[in-house]
Length: 87
Image 1 (cartoon, rainbow, N blue to C red):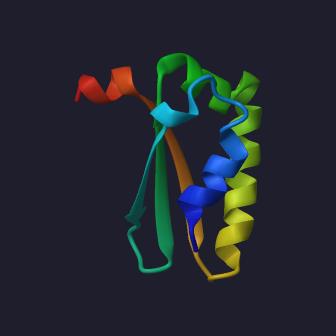
Image 2: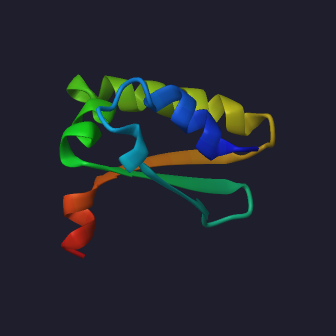
Image 3: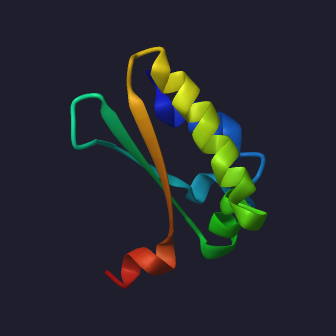
């Protein structure tokens, strides 16, 4: 499944600069786990998380449903480029 395409379809209209979004897809702890990391500018990360995490939870729900068609548990994580530089 093309999780990157699904996520871009969901978030491109939410963020200011869709071209700056970095999406990394990694294997989880088990073969049924998929971890998707979305890295964006600080203000776009805030938009993707939303007030009280409501946008992030909605995105997680949609991606989770998509993963169930392949019997996968999809985990969505958010970071800003500022956080990544500090590591």
